[in-house]
Length: 297
Length: 326
Image (cartoon, rainbow over all chains, first blue to last red; front, side):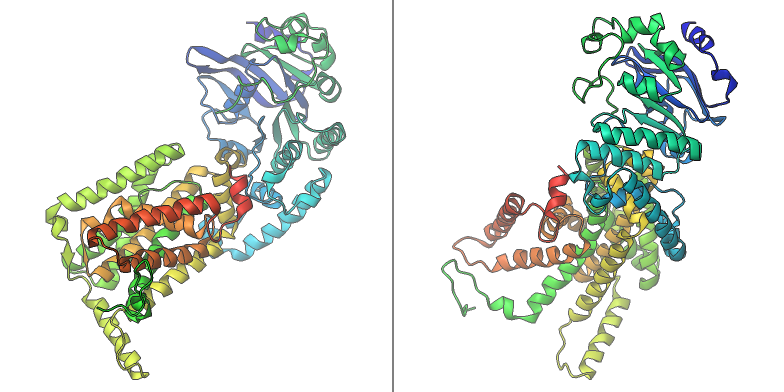
């Protein structure tokens, strides 16, 4: 099988224990296999990029492994525990937290409330906690608020703290969604095009923050990205998907010269995927337009 | 009756000067407040479109009436039992339907409400069909009378018989409003609002969306049951016709009037609604009384249309929330 071969071909990955493993994951929509026996692993503490042409099944794969879509086959484990078949909220509580390609700011809630919501272990989120442990609830709320302020500071959102999230610009929403995901205390963070719509300076800061989270807190990242400059310079490993399956997996420099990858994505591109086929080694990152195939339901 | 003041339209304002009128309006407005608090919890704060609130009200009122008249349960004891029964029904309605998309949920809850009403109409052995049930409120009347004699003893020579009910319904309505308002400010309330904004985002952050929606619906059903008690005590009987979906629709009208996502607006919306609705009865037009009562609904519709056009956030809703919600 080609994906298995690709895995074997990738060097080094096997030496570090994987935090996440997927094997033969299948997702069908009608007669189409949007994800077709995708197999990959993500090394603990790595920053792994997931790339591939539009319609390759990257976002669908995200939706399957985070429980938003029911898988039609395969297995996936996070820290050795099964994830397929679990509902999204339980997967998130395990420490595997995702963001969305199309940002989901909670529009009629303040930026601060968006952040506070994400914090786990809040006794006041259950009715029994509200009634029986109001003190613990308030304590947790204070704890979490200071963490939220720190994160908002990092992403330049401090002055928007009390604004409705719905008033934020697209880029600000993207940053809010990322910092909100960080509030959920993830050990494995799955980001669906985190850089799209963010200005280069903040994008830079976001990448720096990812590096810091990885080195200081040991957070592992898997991110979908189209900007090849970002992928090549800021990830340790690159997984390439095309037509629902993983066609290559390796270090950035290996991927750059992989003939299969050049054929499917970096170079020619498939005939039905004109947007991606224009430039050779660095397909430009592009806006939200034209990506209707991977929208979650 | 000779009206004291006659406007060109022919409205007599005599009735507005009588305490009896305001107590009548007040009792119903208080009942509507409790009823619509449940809708506010569901629609305004959780984003679930519960169109079956009248059905929950029916379960509450009928459970109480049947427990008292058929099973000989003490009236006061029947209330918590009836609330519990209604909450079980809320659970039964919610379990299969809360996974549905918003619009389908509305249809499913509306259907459940009608199924309940038609059952009360047809399960005659249990509910006495369209004849309804009487005689469940002797214990309440005793309390009412002792409140009246208390009022006499403090110097009100001839207290209105409706006053004790009026007093109790508003104490309960305001306590519930206060409780829900406080609850909304807790982290629990924040999760509900997050579900209203984007369920998937909340799930991705580890929130069990279904469990919260179920809690919201079950709590609303309990509020429906309490409203049902007051409806029954005011009418002194329960009949299936009182639980038509119209009641739910009026609840929604009150919600829009008072403003979405504001618990205090509910009471104000209910009072304004009921005042207009009752007041319109005194329109003196060269048409029959039946036509006047139909005209009330037409005018109410116009008020709602005007509100949607010029103040879609209602009286107490926030305009910016309305805009951001679109």
